[in-house]
Image 1 (cartoon, rainbow, N blue to C red):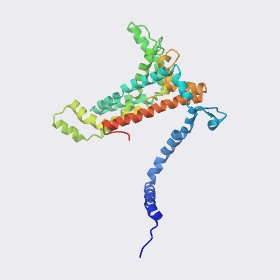
Image 2: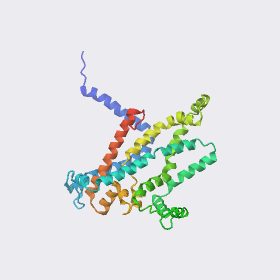
Image 3: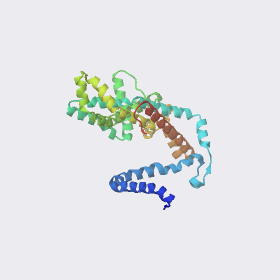
Length: 318
């Protein structure tokens, strides 16, 4: 006696079971999915939905015609940007500012290792509070402080230079000082806050490793080098990759507040150019093309650095 097997039933069985198992997992952990839902919805609305407007970069956008009604322009706006006389200046200023900041990437690591070695609990908490506090100061306030301290007539720095017999310096107007002021004021504002994740990683180091190193005769510096640094290296690699993901995205607000016509040779970057061209001059398609070019570079750098980290280390984003 033979039986007839329905091929559809055989092929759909595993899929049905898979769907049921997925539904069972969601039902069993619905509280976790409910907690994650606001974040997922947020990123979908503010990060993915706006990608609909990317097509403006390839059109001659006219607001009255709408996105779909505007005529396609191909790569005209990209070609216009690449052929412009200011292309290389904007690109170099953006890259130079980002590289300057990237060179100082180890500073939070050094500060975290130093704070972790402090034995006096009261002094350690005081040092942490002192370094964390500038993070909560508004960027507008920070730039206002810079203008006040560096004023060539009545600023604190000018007064100190006068006491030393030196002439006042136009710090905020000279192009050569812009990058130094921008980067080091950013270090003052964000250094302490950037150490938090490294301190959290150091808190997870097994104390038995330090005890074993001490038994072997390792001093404090040797224990930092052979115990603490390897323990936080996965965190360092991940944060380094993420920094490259925003390599071209220099702080727009601070640059805009600090820039003026006198320091424009070094303060003109891609982000401020997009703002001035798109919002102030109404060249929406052109500004969208320049912004898309900047984002594509960030994506390529992120993928490239992640692949290098994956090849030469055991840590990567994916």
